[in-house]
Image (cartoon, helix red, strand yellow):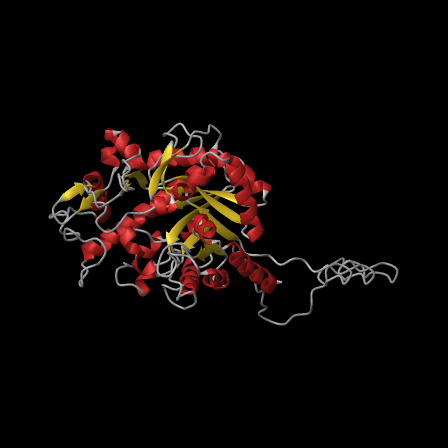
Length: 472
């Protein structure tokens, strides 16, 4: 927060005898203390009191994510396990948890009247592969984490998969989610600009997670209603949006998006979609980027920005004090493919990236979130570094791009990616704490399941304790 102070300088045009008012405050007598001078007999609040201990330094937060599907076999029906693990999370030195309550299939694990409750999730069972884990308990899943987290001294945030709303059948499991149950919601699903034709994502098998179209007004209303119900949990500390984005550059070429884009640029696209992008363009821009293509990238960033604004307003209308944030990947250099500008609007993107227009910066949304969680997903050999694709570099660059608009916390995925997949990297896990927390405003780790699988508890506790000692 900036507090402005205006100074007014008064100058005289000519020298005159000093003006003496008709009355003045009397000089204090020797027996009267001058109220404008400090009393030597009273302690000076600006000086440290040697008889009092030094105040504890303000420590940065440490977040850990709890994916719904990956951890469901432990927590779906076992409150005692939730409580014991949250105590262990707190003892390790974490301060915040993000518990996933809307997994990618789109049903939820909290109270709402707007969609169904999760009754089963496909969960990895080690060497046994993926199996359904069914929820038979009737207690409130989110409430159980709030109670256990607060008992352990943790702040509890709800993770909310935003645009992901259905999972295709895979690993021998059938498809599930709203968009599979209700055919009337097909129009909500994004339309892909595939090599062959424009196709609804429901018809493209290679896209296992089905994404909604963030430009569709009914989608926005539906998601905001879900978020309002989530914000109604009075003891919940925060909400973190995940997958609040497009899936890639092939999204979204629906009639809804076309109409909105044409209105935005003030002209009709003659050859749709090829005047925007050649069919099949999914992740790599053409060597020469035209004006229409640049405006399309800008429009997509605006669409996500505008959703963030509406979602925040929905959440804060129910609970003004709840923290509102988003998780994003730290690879800003290519994150435009997902239609997201998570930087500050003060960050002039076009000065550094050829794919950004001068107006692209206007749709940075860092000033609309309280916390930005950065996935600093680098390999085990790239913990330290100054650029993207190192844990430290991801965090430092993201912190710079947010420009003080929000709290930025970042960190690794210690279970996926080069070097992490088979465990056995406690020293590297420990190093990520130092690399991340000293490059931004806090630490983040994905995911709790990996900490448990590979027994990284001690290593992470050592890393967090080393940070706490260094901060004293």
